[in-house]
Image 1 (tube, rainbow, N blue to C red):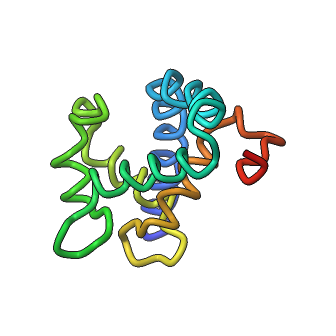
Image 2: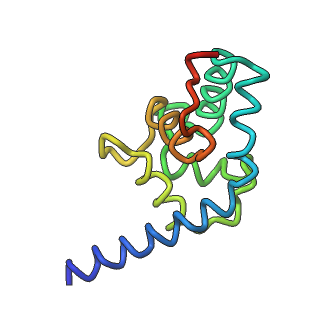
Length: 123
């Protein structure tokens, strides 16, 4: 029974990747131009603003509840609860079920294929 749940979760996770990639193509395409326009420091500042927009103010992290509550700000209001959970799981490096600011920024970089070989620190 547990093996079936893991298989089902893995399949949902794979499906989420395909849906997420399809839904954020425009978002991903803007990152390199934002870096060019804002510079590395300005771009990081904007990523941090995005994190603050989505985070639970009391907890200081992005939780399922805060992501669900604020998903409309990203045009993601149509995502199902399991999609939001998969999004959190994808970026949750420390396994606490939430995204801190560093995890959020790492996830944003990982989701953008346009960053291959791009050095944000080079400005």
